Image (tube, rainbow, N blue to C red):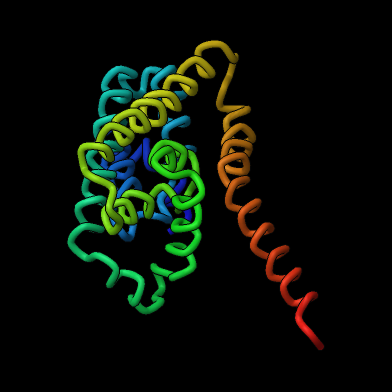
Length: 208
């Protein structure tokens, strides 16, 4: 299972269609939060530099998949509504994911639709919560398009130039992907640390 989620394996076995399908699923399908996004797009850009993929079809496909994925997530949130918060935990779903995304969305407002693109797990549930809330679709789709273009187009292009400019990029690809994953998870770690500190502070001030 973990090997299948390896970006290089996905590209080698599924090609451009697989990359586009995974970006679509991770962007808005309820079960897609565990799929690779940032690392897959960057690695696909490196593969395009090596001639394994067409960079323009990759960029176009990733942008369209990201925008459509978020739109599907929004529609799902509209349909399910607040009932999603009463959904029991399962192997592929934890309520804490929704709670973290809800706090992220509350903190950043409409811009969360764009910013969430760069935060794993949160990017899957943000459009769903936008649909659950009162954000009009016309407003949502504007931020959705901007975020989809920046994220879906930007990361493959970065990977493409990395592959063009760095000799033997495969030697450095794994460390770079690890750095991308770490950077993308920084907001999640900061949020978790903030919640822990607040909880610890409340317990400290409670009478013994």
